[in-house]
Length: 143
Length: 149
Image (cartoon, rainbow over all chains, first blue to last red):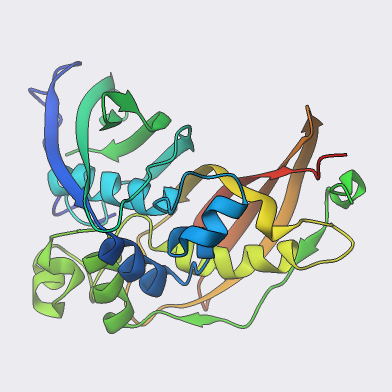
């Protein structure tokens, strides 16, 4: 955490949306994430394998979704300023070929700790009207 | 073969240190759409108060997943990787990861619970820098479906 780039605590309100982004996931996004992360589980690029294990087809890496969500929080918090991040992966995001899976990330102030000057940011990732992450929370130290 | 609950408490590592490079941070930042220039340029990172390019929030997974692989391939734990889905993940950063860091990892099996034909395997990977100081703690749960009988 760098003390120089933290967001200001004063003026924050519980319920306030601090950042929002619409993301388009394609097979290209999945291949790119596989390479960058080293997660080469074939359910993220091979439809036959995905169907063999009971999935409708290729799905996005849960960690790609969480990584994208973190980037939305970070855009507000400043790079390197998310001290803690957690989520449950509750619903897969099938990514068509060809085509696009559109998800919306919303980052909202969930709780404020005036003593520590930290903000808990609650993140929702919505795909086709349903949440794909459970208890997605980030802790951000503020100035 | 079901997951062996007696594997709880096992630890693997420390593994050979992972060298964090600028190019890997850039690649990862592109993949998760992290848009700050502090992930790309040393100059921009300095302006944000960092000595070099800073990694995005979930970059630690690159190192943690390599460590977790030692659990998955241990035949005495008995995880069938083709039956695995990722159930949850948590990052606690003691400090941000910076280009140039040499990071060692040790992975611990913290818990295994079994219910309704699914084993939940929770691992905790501790990342430390070259001085042995804590960098990040990564807790990850895999859900492993047992074979239908």
